[in-house]
Length: 279
Image (cartoon, rainbow, N blue to C red; front, side, top):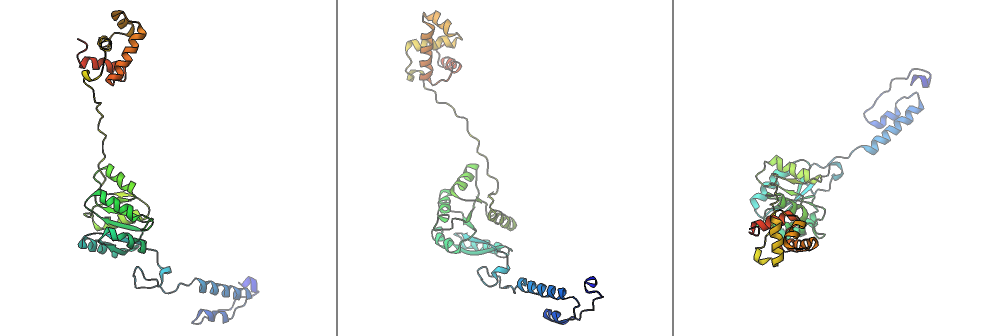
């Protein structure tokens, strides 16, 4: 500041309180204005003492701590519920805001507490659990909550049903505590999770149901055409053998394929062979 004041700045004599700095000897009036501004900014941004009680529902000092992920437990077995609460209670960023042993009564409770994540204990059937998921996410429940089922998805079909019902995934209770915490955090962040990975369901080959020959309603002429087809003859060759016009052969063959459920000439010929029409 010497260049602005025309001479060397004198040493400031600091006192105990910040406001006292305004009364120290300052050569440049601009420095005084800057000091006022800095003190005003500091006064506006200085944080108030934060609450140290750490209760998840305590409103005191809420603005001074990160918003915790609110977790609600729906578990019929008290020991399991207590174990989950013990695992989650000491984790930074997670807060267990309530629990219920009855899924039917849990809807009212989650509507009141508005959790971010609901952990739903395993019921008697998957269908029953999916009905509970749908109820929890109704407007009179917690429609924005993410629901994790505490069970395995045995197949990808079951995993799809969970997602279609509004769930965000599932995991069994035999996971290590740290993996349970990771699962809750991942789902709270918007992800989906299935642990362990469900077994893919491979589609079974569709075996067409083939009508017996005596149930197809084939006429004698249609049987004759199929028999000739089974010998590998063309429509023209079949017509010459049976003294039929080629168009008539085609008509009989089309009717025979429709009645036997065969989609092309090759399949119709194989049907004729399987059922003894080829002789």
